[in-house]
Amino acid sequence: MVFTFAKPVAASNRYWATGADVQINMIDHCGEDFTYPANTPFFIAHGWFTTEWTTNTPALDKRGFMAPTTYFEFRVDRVPQPSSMVAQYIPETDIKNKLFVTEFDQGMTGPHRLGALWFLDGSLVGGTFGEAVFQGACVSNVMFG
Figure 1: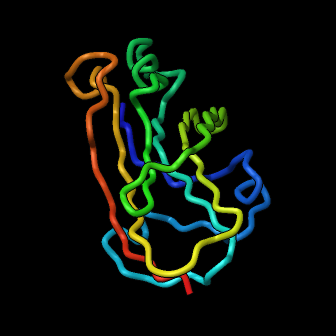
Figure 2: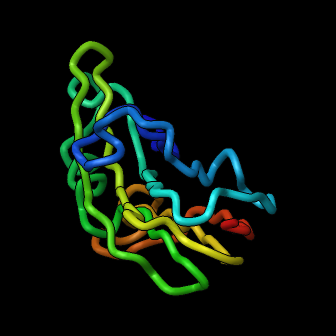
Figure 3: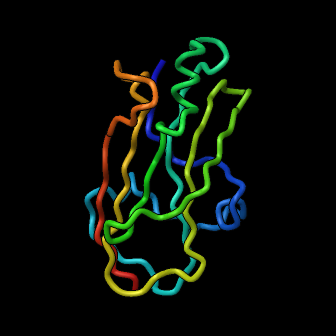
């Protein structure tokens, strides 16, 4: 079983659900400085996915995957932003997604530092259930203008 950083494939949030091309993908922009139009709505959606959810994922691993300590955190200027968690099962591929969506209805202006942090429950990486274990980060400087 493999737990992998997830790029979103579907959603229930306003911008994500429309299919509008207003996502800033932190994996694609990891470590980059880039620009984005000012005052333009956008969303961030990242998290985790795992394959073989029903066929090869032990119950204790499912518990760790769905625990609140398996999560994605998005920050603007080092301040954590609120997000909505969307968990999806895709039966055709036996994949389980756990994604976190943050939307910016009014967009932003000026320079900002965007940060993305991924955590897995400790039980999935040889540690203790209920303990969040840092797995990786991406930071980008964005000029909204």
